[in-house]
Image 1: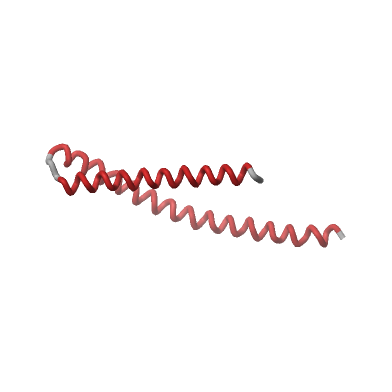
Image 2: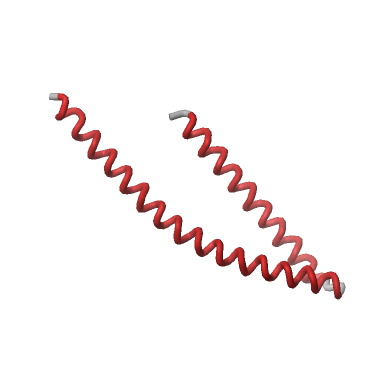
Length: 92
């Protein structure tokens, strides 16, 4: 009798674990792509910052400022994600 009750739960937990594993594999590829893009952005910012100091280029200055703002927004989003993750793991 107990096996009839527990069996479906085990199956559902296995499905959940497999779904989570698949999601993590997909996220890992996305994280690698994001890392590559951020490395290019970092290289650009280094060169643009040096160029901005050498020459008063308004376009480069604006681009650098907006890029940095976007990075700060992304950091805020990650902080928010980790906060929500902490909250959800504490509630379990």
